[in-house]
Length: 505
Image 1 (cartoon, helix red, strand yellow):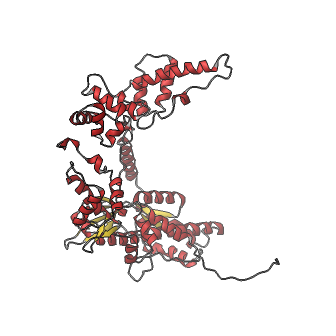
Image 2: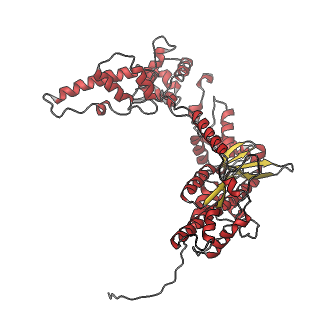
Image 3: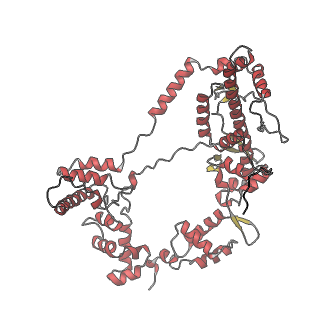
């Protein structure tokens, strides 16, 4: 094989994203709260950015930047390849004539405004939800009530802080034992036996704490720890927990009756008492607070019956290029070349940010409006009337790439007359009904749940029978689809759903 060095020309196509396009996509993907944080960060990093805080008593003031209009009349970002475009800077320098006369006074916060901001910050901190007491804190506090040796107490503390969020001890006791001393003079095995005895006493102490069942190493042990002599069906519950938990899970009551001699009615009564026990005693101490959601889009119904969307961007400040730095560029001797280059670069970055925010507003509005127009029945009649919708359909309707739609709806919420929903909630797959109508999978799930709720529990429907029942409602699906949805919805099998108390035998 012959090797040689040489030069050759080759044509190739590749896509390169300009920095401002990347920034535009990032801004589009941000929800409103994250966008506010991004603006605050940019304000700290870019001295050329200035703002006028929005006022609740006045209409939103639009930035004075000018944009080239697209054919549809909407503002669009004009991508320019030259990063040092002098026309941009000349346009920015001359924008001072278009600013309000009292711009600088309004953009500078007054003493009263600063005091009001400080009061709001203080009130927000005062009204913050206190950190709830953790399971480990709760148990450690109880531990202080008991008298115990130092070794037992230290081991009990180690066990408490080794519990998982449900209150179970998943770590073997052997792994919690303290390490053997380096200068051990004696039998190591004997010391381990002594340490293990201390660990067993510590575990027993932890298992006597509240909530009952804490410190268990298995579900069976957890339920057994919650049994107390004198409670209803104590003997029967002890037998069911020790020998027949799996049979109960699979609703094999006749088999339990055959092995124990208990009647079906007695087993079911004991089972009702068993359901009162807590399989996860530590779950009550888990963090249950749900983070608040701030909708990005609001949808309102007009007098003509149509829905219109508007963006919740009243909390987004109006951004401007600082007049001070424009004046520095305008003045011939206002700054040296290095400083002027720095100002130009910062003004360029500020311009990109302002235009990206405006493009986000336009794109999100068009995408949300298209979604609302497609899901009118959902808004009018409820979630069961949602229709199949793909992101590609909205992309074709709006005239953007499907990835743009994906970024626009990502982590965004919409306030509708029936509640607050994530925008992604409106995108669902579906199937075709017997009459040729498109049916969303959500509607299939709702109908499946309705059929199961109304079935005769003495003879519950099998998955094949559920397919037939759905077909009676015009929904044609395969058996494997029914099985998949049933499991995803935590609907037990027909055997597990059967109510043996209604058996006439």
